[in-house]
Image (cartoon, rainbow, N blue to C red; front, top):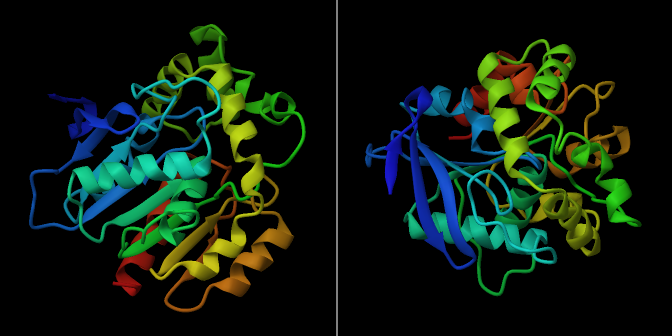
Length: 281
């Protein structure tokens, strides 16, 4: 099933082992182009990528997946939100569409999923080969202890009236576009507190993920938000990232960017991405 979507994207549905998933695509019919797969962060959806998708289209066939429990994809019950399970979803998605050597981009929770997938961590068979991997302010350690407390900042907006949340988002994110705001509102209305808490509960056992960087075979770009504006990568973690990457892989920090780098500093984010894709091709 496919339909035209705002922004030149097409809205699609696909059945994977875990259930029915939704995804957006840009330029999927351009079979001569390489592919690029986008994985969003927690409490977001494919609408997180409404500016990035068109920016990459023309050079890539772009596919953004609504991850389990989010957007218009399958909503499993609690207990099945480990990174191995979300990585398996992405792997099945890529294989079902027969995407060969795609670029893999992940933000936050999607970055953690991308890191697990691209490294093959916990997989029963060799992972998919990627041409390049881009990790945008990746979640690299979901912590320990009460998952509801750890998830609190992400569940706080669930159930808030759209008008109130819209005003809150506009005030705290002045560089987001109207598309970004409305996309976040839509995503917020489709995610449950149970799913978000389960992400934290089910990923706890996976611990620190940064050592997986050393297992990546594809050139990798790690993009860090401003350390003073809520980056997932503190100075210790950033030092660990830089130690594990060697050319043509890159580590880039974008001053003034909040955790949602591709929304708050879109132009700078795309400049970093474009420079990496060109240098590591």
